[in-house]
Figure 1 (cartoon, rainbow, N blue to C red):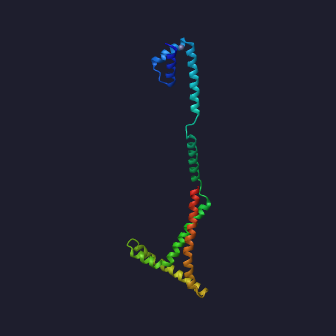
Figure 2: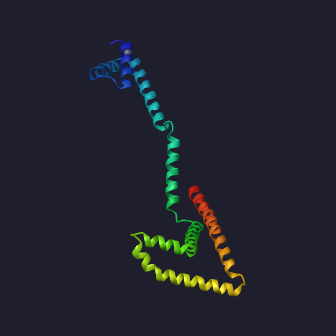
Figure 3: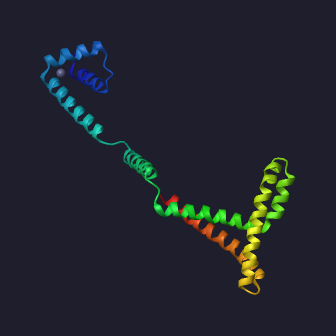
Length: 188
Ligand SMILES: [Zn+2]
């Protein structure tokens, strides 16, 4: 075999496409020919170095992928952290305001609500059972009204004004609290 043919076989060997037969021929030649043996080992060394380098070098986007993974883990970790106390208080405040608002609305509109519930076949029995409680509630409200009227000469009107102010104010406050709570949750 001539040296330039051996060189071609060496290239094939580097590309990993050398046949068994060709490998035997090449092997035979480099045991005989010193110059080809030298170039074979030189090629081999260069190949090894390139392989090591490509193994060390991260593929494109590898770093950003790793960073994204780390961020995912951090988010997971943060979500598992106990909810900050201010979020809990905001939530409780929101729930309380909402219930209070519903309570105030029910105090004002209990008669139409009761009428609606009594007319609905699904809530009829339940509403029937609620009548004594509602009456008691009305009695209680009227009692407060009377006491207020006794306390202030024009008490009845003041109570109506308080009711009219309390509902929108509580609704706005609850909305603000909820908005702050949501914003904080998103920022996490
Ligand atoms: Zn040779």
